[in-house]
Image (cartoon, rainbow over all chains, first blue to last red; front, top):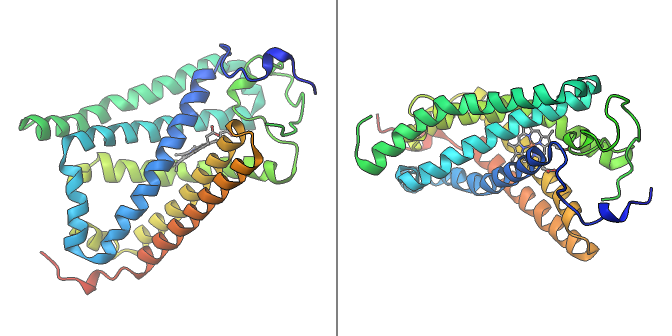
Amino acid sequence: MAKRRADVGTLYKGSPGQWSWLAHRITGLAVTLFLFAHVVDTAVVGWGPDAYNRVTEVYHNWVVRVLELGLVAAVLYHAINGTKIMVFDFWPSTARYMKPISAASTVLFLGSMVPITWIMGREILNLALGWDL
Amino acid sequence: MSVETRAGRSPAIPPGRGAEVRRRDRPAGGFELWSWLFMRVSGVALLGLAVGHVLIMHVLDEGVSRVNFEFVQLRWESPFWRTWDWALLVLALLHGINGLRVTVQDYVRWPGARFALNVLFALTGFLLFVLGTVIVFTFDPNAWPRTS
Ligand code: HEM
């Protein structure tokens, strides 16, 4: 099918779901990049405690913990949004409820990030400021 | 991307309205259809494997603060966790790298660059698969002193 001229080379024109599409792609790519590094850092366990504990030291840095919180958020967003995609794919009639289902998945994501941010954020503050939350 | 999709598969979704939310329309057949299906089947598995992994290792029970050599020594005494970690390794690599392939297909027009990138990703994935598999299955907790 020939595409209309305006359809070629235009990425985002304000269609519903464009932001969740973009966020799904960015979180997927970000987690994949982290995965590459993570397989290597975990493999260091094969070289014994000295080597591996030097690697896990990295996680005692609060800046790394902020990135880690971002990683958890990325996985969670991608998982929940991926489920949403599959619901529409496998049960097309649910597309009628696209708006409420999309809203529900956003609420589920943000809602689960509240306790997670509290749990991980506490440790970040403890590490960064020497607090004891 | 010029993948044939099954047009009009769903009267509930008029073209151009909301079809965007089904990020990638189901391809009509061949490799792209299998790729489409694989992303969804592995997605379901990763829902348990990856989300569970992230919650257990990064959020609950002190998260990553408690992870060190001794932790892995204990954890990998159990074939259950070794199997979990290996399944996660394989599925996340395949799912993630197939995702990279789809993304490259969307943005990289020149076939030579496309091919080069896909070879690079596939090779990276294969090497990480070998490295991870060897470590998960050959790591011997008793080969190292116990600290407690
Ligand atoms: C946790 C459960 C997960 C679910 C339910 C899930 C679901 C999905 C689905 C359905 C797609 C296809 C989207 C489409 O065809 O438009 C997808 C794409 C993708 N996923 Fe996942 N996924 C999960 C975990 C992961 C993980 C752990 C990674 C990283 C290793 C990852 C990386 C990617 C990438 C890079 C893409 C391609 C993005 C794109 O095409 O725009 N996913 N995911």
